Length: 114
Image (cartoon, rainbow, N blue to C red; front, top):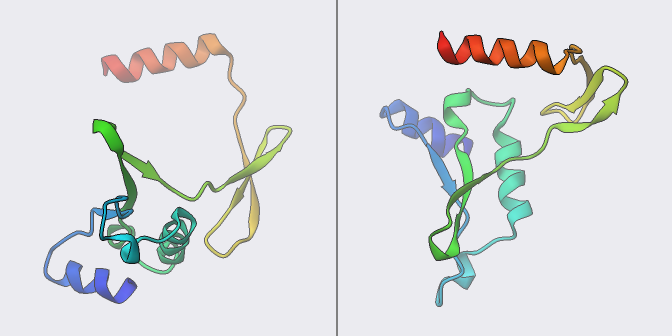
C-alpha cells in the first residue's frame, strides 16, 4: 500500500480515500473486515508522509454518505493528561489544558469571527 500511494504521489495524485468495499452482490471476495482496513491505515501512519495516508471511509447505505473511520489514538485519561497511542504502539501522556466553559466559548467566538 505504501509503495502504491508513494507512486500515486509521484504523479501528483493524492490518495484521498480508501473505501471499504460495499456489501454488493458479487463483490464478497473483495470485502475485508473493517478492522483490517483500520490496520492498513494504521500501518501507513508514522511510516510515510501524511499526504500518502488516505482517509478510510465507509459509504453508508441509503444515502448516508461517507463516514470516515480512523484508529482511535486516545487510550484514556489520567487527571489532566490524555493517554495517546502513537504509530509504534507506545502510549504517551499529553497535557490537556484545563479551561472553563466560559473561556472556551469566548475563544471559539473569536476564532469564528476572526
